[in-house]
Image 1 (cartoon, rainbow, N blue to C red):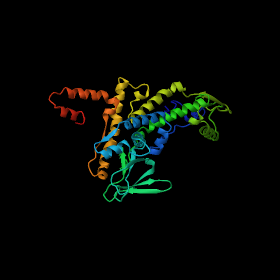
Image 2 (image 1 turned 180 degrees about the vertical axis):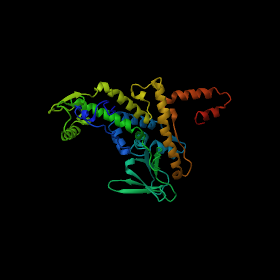
Image 3 (image 1 turned 60 degrees about the horizontal axis):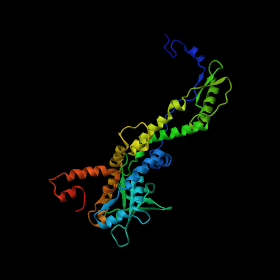
Image 4 (image 1 turned 90 degrees about the vertical axis):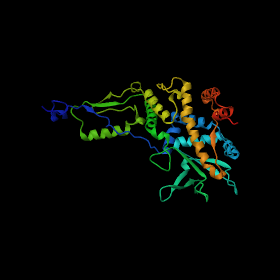
Length: 374
């Protein structure tokens, strides 16, 4: 028995039994770059889900006031730079941190003074690490208007450039953007939108196959020419549904699934959920269907603040505390005013109730546990 495919047919019989011409061969998926600039362009500037998630996280974290027991540091946190209030400064820092995995802040000191007078955020695209012979960052090169300046440590060992980064196992100097982990979901979400738009522009006609009715197989030179023309003129999202002019015994047979059968909406919703989760936003807050992780909106909102916005703000506050010790000449503690966060009001009320019911505590101990000044 001959086990060649189809079963029971010889190779000579197969040569004259194939009337179907394949449109194209399967190709590997083309994924976008994980570089910070490409993620910003394809995500924040072109994808509504990524844009909304970044805005939600950055605005929520920036709305948490920062305070300090040190008077000069407290004034600096309330008014970090002349051109913007604290919320605008913090939003710029958190947005850069979410989009690039890094946030850079430069401290400005007045001539003859050691204390910091102002803080300015610097876009990550303008900053380049300068490494020493051991591979450690010794200075930062900052691009300006056609120039580049280097900022390193002063005589006391303090650097006026603060870097806050998200851990990156592949790079010791620069952080990992959260959207890098969701790059495939971002590409899928954008590609589905491009394909649907191109299909609508081309009269919503699905793809298919060409059936050769001339008997036998198409001559090799005609097959190669046809394959090349199909690849150039009828493949890809930009040519979706483009009409063809048939000749030479060719017939068109639709094979592709319709947009409803392919369920573009569910595909995009699944990709949107991955993008939202990578940025720490519960999909329920975005109105994305099919996500029942939390029982209600209030629970999802509390989780968003507790698991995403608050840790991001605490990371920056902790970095500021360590960084500002040297210029102010003492231990500086930058903390968050959680009493100003409405979403955490329920947790705060429960804490006060437990503290108030503790009869074994003195009033001073209760005020300390509630983080209230004596």
